Image 1 (cartoon, rainbow, N blue to C red):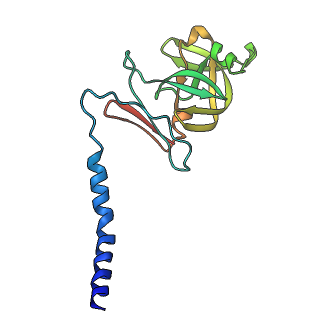
Image 2 (cartoon, rainbow, N blue to C red):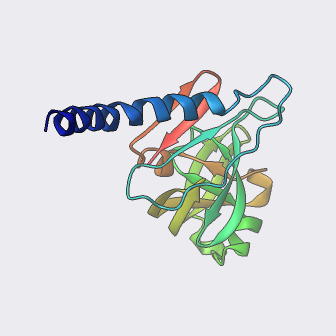
Image 3 (spheres, rainbow, N blue to C red):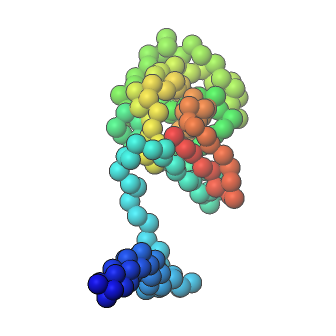
Length: 173
């Protein structure tokens, strides 16, 4: 009887301690990356129900540029925290299916290129790296008034947070 009790206690001790040692051994088995190792980027995870985050690096000009998806079509943006709304070039707005008439260009915005007339539009969905916002206000600018699409505050202000950290722009849904 004593032998059975000793065996049961030993089995319980092994069962309690074994997972710790297996985790340690498995952790040491994976070799740490070396300085010369090439790191691959995993594809973005499927929607998990939790917050999504995207980190944007500066481009060669020092700007934060990113490919976005607007209403299912991919278009490039420069992130502009000084722009109150998303601003689209007339050419890219047309690719997205927005064709404002000349009479729709009733808004005026001050840009680096001066005062520009714009037409207001509502974008059904804007997504950047898995971070998505629906029903986003935007403006369409004549191509001569805007060289590239701007991702402005009508998108950014609807996120949980956006911040500049360690030379990168972090967006969180």
